[in-house]
Image 1 (cartoon, rainbow, N blue to C red):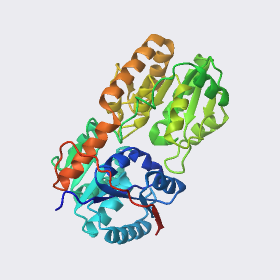
Image 2 (cartoon, one colour; image 1 turned 30 degrees about the horizontal axis):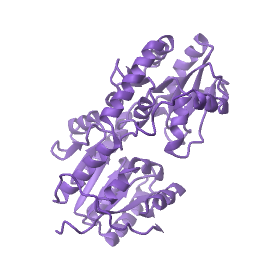
Image 3 (tube, rainbow, N blue to C red; image 1 turned 45 degrees about the vertical axis):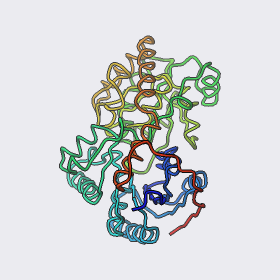
Image 4 (spheres, helix red, strand yellow; image 1 turned 60 degrees about the vertical axis):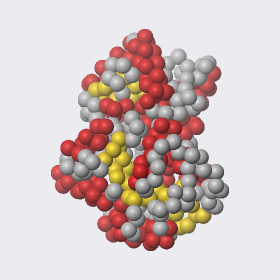
Length: 410
């Protein structure tokens, strides 16, 4: 195999929103000798990402839900595209994209197949659904040559459940999807001007305490417990507000009472206008305490971003979450599905500004030290090179011209 020939890499993700996992990484890998293609479900974000990064993009409907007929059609379309591209590597992400992508790549006889586990849905399920979801993970791991994990706790669960052999799975650097740029992007603002401006836009009083949640507003993110805790906190702290940065979704919906409270409480605010990552530091600036009471995660970038902004964080001992927070040092962890413990943790932070500041500063220090994007990118590139039988030392920069944009709807 020639070491000078550019290699071809295909990323497969379920939805175009997940392309944020590849920000910066794409350019780094391109510059080191790879031509890149991406495949996701259709969406304007796919086209925008392809144009921005000068890569080829293809769209295939890949519903997040289990839909046997649609899934078979998606696998057939993936197989057809991969047979045409003939990539050296297929890198499949997220549970559904991982399953369909590894099957399609295996059928197309792609030599290097990577499954990137970014969270384990079966952890939040029971009965037959849990067993089915475990089976999908087992298939993805079996058909992959290599399995990447976002966090040590996810890796441990996968191995302990017998879903993957320990010698096939690895933790990239210290974990995380793509690292967090806490040097230039996710960093505290020098004055309160931005904070005051965004609070005014959100109709949040400038002197109020703001508890913030960032993510999909669904049951698995612990929203029902958060609202249970909020019902007590709002009576105890009249100058406290709750801010959601995200949207409701049609799957894994919250309880009807939860949604009613969110929609009718005048002290609950919504910011669902975020279009890209560069919008996020401004919204974090409006928050005093970041809360993510999730039931499961891969390794939540939300916590790392908030840490970069110097915010104290409350999360749970769930897989992924416990890797992102050093309990009692960079934030507080509570039991999964425990509204009372969540309430007490929020109360502790509200009452203790010194503790908030201490944990926020420690969180920023940890993100800067352990979750630099460049370290994650290099770890991924090193894995690519190793799997292709290429040198894995310091990678030379390859400045060959990049491929032209080509968007293909299949």
